[in-house]
Length: 138
Image 1 (cartoon, rainbow, N blue to C red):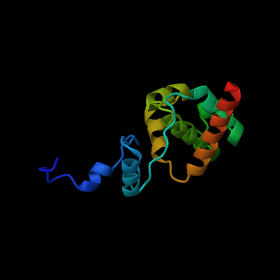
Image 2 (image 1 turned 45 degrees about the vertical axis):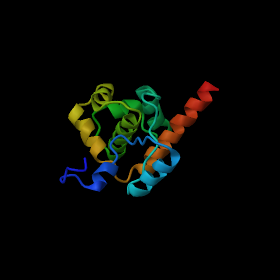
Image 3 (image 1 turned 60 degrees about the vertical axis):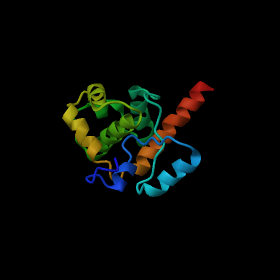
Image 4 (image 1 turned 135 degrees about the horizontal axis):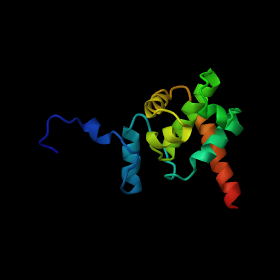
C-alpha cells in the first residue's frame, strides 16, 4: 500500500459498508476522519418487506396497494422511494424490492438514487418499524 502512489490517504478512510474493526480508540479515530459519519446498519432482513409496506401505510397513510399500483402521484412516488430506501437499509437487494412492489428493477434503482430530503422520513419509518418489532417480541 505504501508503494502505491495512486491511492490517497483519504481513500482508505472512505467507508463502503459502514464497518470499522478495531479497539474503541481506533474506531473513534476513524470516525473523526470520516466526513459523512458512520451510521448504524440495520440487521439484514431484520424486518420483512411486508412489514416495511405496512409501516409506510401506517406512518405516511399510503396504502400498500397504491405502492404496487400504477399511480404516479407525488405521495405514492415518495412512498415507493421510502419503501425502497428502507428496504435497502435492511439489506434487501433492489431486485427483491422490485419484485415485491411489482415494479421494474431499474425503477427501484432510480428510487434509491433520489434519497435527498428523505432522511427524516426514513428515520421516522425505521423508528416505527423498530418499535413495532420490540412490542411484538415482548
